[in-house]
Length: 245
Ligand SMILES: Cc1cc2nc3c(=O)[nH]c(=O)nc-3n(C[C@H](O)[C@H](O)[C@H](O)COP(=O)(O)O)c2cc1C
Image (cartoon, rainbow, N blue to C red; front, side, top):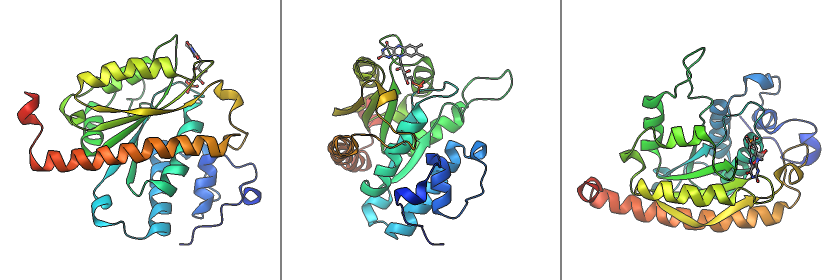
């Protein structure tokens, strides 16, 4: 399977998810069926095709991208899909997605699937939380997700991509730093932030200030990866449970 060229003309009016599908030849895949799980599979496939086997160390490292919003019609999809495109090109790590919308029960059972969530969090070596700001805080579904387990977060780094109105979601991030400290994580100083987010992306989901956004992500990512490697090595040498108790 060959990945197709990523030029803008080829992209046309496709959404990010349709575009990811198109790149590996699933042109006719209905957009409504392109869930975040499927996007994850597509990005893995793209990564595998372009980079071949990962280097030994990176192969074992996983960054989980966490959706902060579970709102229908959420802007979060646009921001996550942009981040995935850059991560795919830059991270060298395996990337997984943690999406409260996908992990919710159906019908009246709206509780998160705690077991599936815990497994995903446990398997990750680092996290990028993509959060909007709601009333000067972060969304309730994100808190539910964070509170779903405890130890699987321990001794791992967390980076943030935030968005919102005038504050660009930075107030939500500052609150999240307090929460993540309680979970024995290390939060990354540098945040990628989109103020007035609805004016920051074109119809195809690309930031108007693409170079600026990418530069911010690369700084955060470089530091996130440093911590991910350092903490993985430390956890391997000496289980964190010994000091967390
Ligand atoms: C209930 C609610 C409260 C909001 N409060 C704020 C706020 O305090 N500060 C801000 O900058 N933006 C605020 N916004 C704007 C959101 O950050 C923006 O609409 C964002 O796109 C929402 O993310 P989502 O579409 O992924 O759910 C609010 C939006 C909603 C729905």
